[in-house]
Image 1 (cartoon, helix red, strand yellow):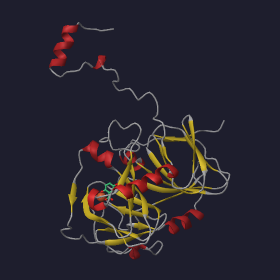
Image 2 (tube, rainbow, N blue to C red):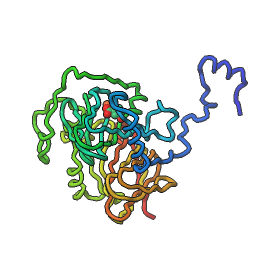
Image 3 (cartoon, rainbow, N blue to C red):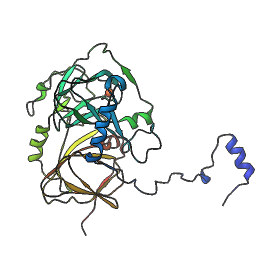
Image 4 (tube, helix red, strand yellow):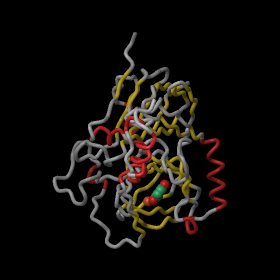
Length: 336
Ligand code: GTQ
Ligand code: FE2
């Protein structure tokens, strides 16, 4: 029911004034959580081969297939889940991706092949199965592949956040001046760090987190309240997230464990590293296996379980962004 006559609306609209009482979604939360989506390795891997056949990094700069949310309104709406954009990047032996830098923070998680390296501010980071490599915002980076077989890795970036904040900056190489970095070895002795630290302080000085280190830590990690065991990838200097906007962790589902349903307003992308299982997200249950990637859009109840043996999932979320803005909410379904 209108409270005013049509002429008044016409005058407000002409002056670019919108009456709040007429606004269809004034301060209303969305009707419900978005549905999850899964990119199954069996479906996407042949499409990676298609990208190998159709393109070279020389022609397309980066051979990347973005995982666009089914809720994206156009190709320009670059997001996978909330503030997180995931993609598959692939290189053939002998190929390189040229140096550049950008404000967007990115991480890489190797899924297939070996022998590729990412150079981050000149520091060489090997990429073997399950390794995490960071390329924090405004760090120069380039990829090289001197191995013998194709490599495929997961890229995760905070692109949607930068698009919303208007902070996208991209600078192609050549590298002007290589910033100061420290060897990862300086931080590789447990619980001991150098007193003098060179280089930037707004991201981890360590760029490479080997898979075996995560597996070793997981083996002794106590269960979270929901029943899964988790480790976080942190900046060794302060225990906080390795990068400001992407929280990365590894979850292990021991055989027979079904996690207590949990809900959060963070947005999550999960990639299966090892094992098979099922995740219930809202009303839907999805079955997954190695190298599948699926989303947990904010506000969904989520519960995971592994099938036969243990399973490990690499998880990236925007939870730390929300946390530092005082906006994060997390809950666990209470028993009974
Ligand atoms: O590897 O530098 O998926 O700059 C998107 C933008 C990867 C990269 C992406 C990038 C990169
Ligand atoms: Fe990049």
